[in-house]
Image (cartoon, rainbow, N blue to C red; front, side, top):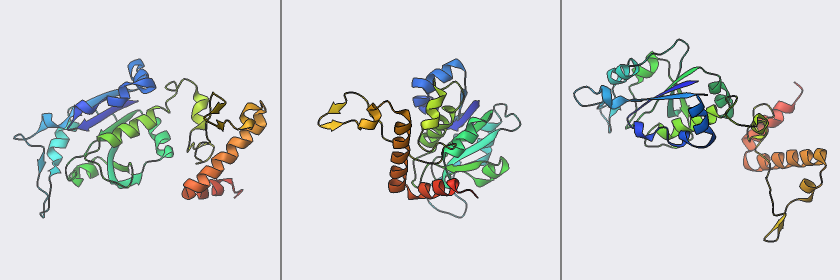
Length: 233
């Protein structure tokens, strides 16, 4: 996977993408990251203009963004993504979709947004990190990249661990069961005896029951999806 990020603040990257397993994957070349500074393509020292029709704030200009995009090769089939609260909410399913892409371009907006003509020309998909507004698209972009790259084969050492994630697409959109480690008794709280029994069938059943209970309580929307997925029709 080759990822290009268009941003006004290139110093934000790679940030957390340069550490831990994601950082190792970057250094091993399991994915590549190119960061393009939009400011380098400013016209008369500016990257933005006031909104047509009036209003507060400034809008990133389409000609500046076009110049930034034209500064590197964009292969056919590239996926264009624009983090925005107007977009569809990001999900594990999207992460799996993105992880199969060869080339992705992220545009990090700032100020009051981006001239929509640029987004329309290149068929940017708007994707939301959540129902809130950030100062720009960089934090959302970091989250989307990490969630997608970790699904690339070879990034996570034990691929079976991905199958036990919360929201795993294959097993159903359940939240993960509770985890315990040693000491067995800590400040009066003990590890459930079933986890110490050595009975793998009972352990698996307990974990499934816990995942179902937590999902039903905390995310009734996901629970409805899970139940619907279990139906034979």
